[in-house]
Length: 513
View: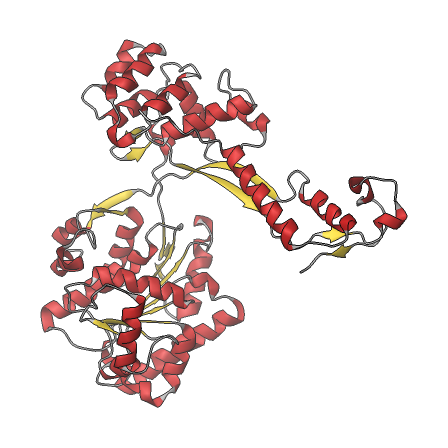
């Protein structure tokens, strides 16, 4: 077996900090040796440049029904099974969605607007994209495909729109749903747009339902339009873009989604709110009918559960549409986490010797090829009772290990403590975990790290680790560094640290490049 490379979060964080410190000292470099030494002295102050590492539990989002199950229930149309062209790498209808994604689909099913406020990596886009695709596929299944915008997705940056294009290419392969990006990067003519597309996507084949150029978007408006608020302003003003809203194509506008909605606050938020009202007025003037729009907002940074009333009000002010079902019911979708403490045994069977954690880490070096007998041997030699070892019988190695560790006393204490950040540089906090023999020293950090790595492999249920976690380190920007220009003259016989004394009244000046 290959030798296990042990990870020490504190050493790793210090290496990053040292590299960053060297970078700043080189970038902000003074020819005057006293000023340079003063700068380096400040940067070396403990805690000045970096904080952490901190250990944080990151429980997975709770999983719910699959797209296939929602189709069987009638919550989604059968056309959803064809997304991705039948390639599960593009779209797998049998992969469980997150609970908050299912909740969003149910809200859309009942004709509700909603805001999605969940963490990064929680699939916020699918919360509005799947309902939009379902609505379009259902329409096309009944009446056949036709051009015209059904949904507009508004992004604050072109980079986000470009990322969404890649996802749409995977999802919409083999479907009739057309899509296109209309931003400042979009070429006017089809020939230039196609040439640019080939340069940006070497070796790939363009889908027939992706519309690339401005002239083609005006001629055959895509069913899904990706743009930004600046371009939307132009679209509403320029006569040549009128076909997107005219009676021939404008009657089918049904969805507006705004990603990263928290950006649109203050004066910018007011501007976007009026822009959306102009859009609705324009469609009504062109088609003679007031559009019935489904509105969606997403953000990873807008408030907590206690802030839901404010989030709903913010979204309502932004779109000019209701974001509540009446009464106290608010159309704000938040995530649910699969909390590890819910799986712990409330009456632990005992405790492993601290040295056993390094042995378990070695046994789990390759979780894909882990040997159950190697795990059992470590546990048996560490004094785990036979009746507890029997929990591994009939289970996969990682799930069997999890069933044993969920009843281990130190795991019980660590998992419960990790509900909040644990500062690994505060060695006293390690001792405060209350794990027998675990001291607040470097050896304690090594043992704690081994525990975290083992618990990230051992499973509490199928494919769900006991503890999913991450280490954080925070580095500050170099702004706010102040130097004393007179230290040599005033205190020639003192050290640099003594010269730079915040308690004196000598003027200091901020460093800048």
